[in-house]
Image 1 (cartoon, helix red, strand yellow):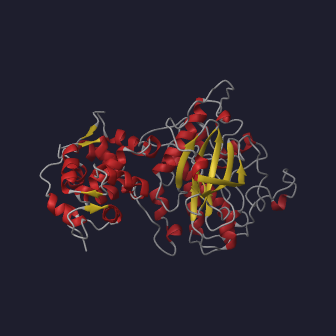
Image 2 (cartoon, helix red, strand yellow; image 1 turned 120 degrees about the vertical axis):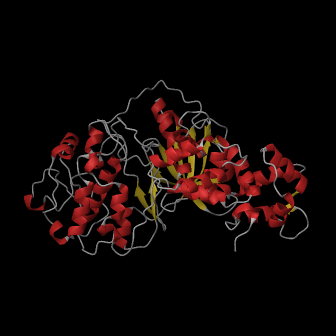
Image 3 (spheres, rainbow, N blue to C red; image 1 turned 90 degrees about the horizontal axis):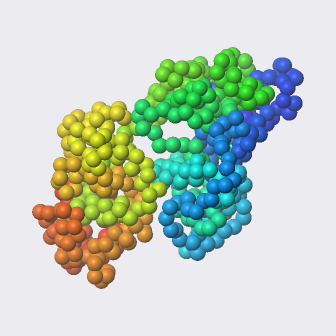
Length: 501
């Protein structure tokens, strides 16, 4: 975090189990040793955790598993036919399963190896018989949707694919094998950090509030216990993590779960006892402002990133919520027509979970539920997430996404414009898009085939010869697969078919 003051040395379990008697019998050490870790139902659930020996380090999502006093209704009568709602390939046709990496409440994580290339992944297999409520099924679906939505971010574990058979749902993801956050700090390694476990995460719309009491006791924000909360609760949870990293103990704890909750609601925040005198005032200021009980007075994520302690040694990356929308629309606007159509083809063939987040985003902006986003709706949608773009800039983005020049952005155009490049550049997606254009299966896209594809998407007055020349690298009057892939992977194709140099 950039703090140059040193706190106590933490061992791997310093935040969980270094205290043995659970009664605080040594009064001189109460603040120097952490409380016993509460074994609540599901607290050891590792259904998303795949950390074993290797390079990457895992940081778990601040929202954890549901405790005995937290919402969970069990019903042995639920019969789960399908979770993903679509047919998938057979996992064992593609991967070889290896040793068990972890066991959780809902499933087991295995090492798996891609048969086509000797690359290791982690496979989390969730037993369908353990999904005993509709809520359980929806949790699994949503977790997969969120992982797809966040795909491409360097600090999020990357999902490779999801499969389903008669007995389980299998989620294949990159193997994170370097331990946990504490391990990285102790070893002073520069391994990348990965956020995992989105089982209790949700898609959020500005202004939305939640009422379900979920999470792990130490990290739950006061407003969560009051059953009315928003995104501010994540700042509290992050503040708890920073407090533990600096001091070795949670800021609010007790010998019972109920006692922990009472401390969270009305306990005093201790920034005086050891080791806090040795920790910088800047660090303490940040923790104090993140652990304000009134959500509206708590720091926002933007303010945390701008705090002096976080910025020590450099400026922390600070991207507003709308940055993904703007950056992807800008990327899309710089593409030629052929690439835009190809991405539209890819978008229309993606599974529901891969575009669930974008679907939510479209609904948020499409205020009248017409299925089309007008210029005014785009302006208001961007305003909701704090955009300060000029009208001229929004007009440019609108024109970029409106492929058929209808004056509005339909659902397909929006999804295509918002797709992350990591999805666009997957080999199977690029091949499917190429095959769409190559209607006679010759292995080449001709100018005539390109013309027909444009007409299907309502695109006219496109200079076909110029478009062909841009992609046709060997000047044979047609586009082969390698030339097509080069176009899809090249970020240098500029507006109006002009390649940037």
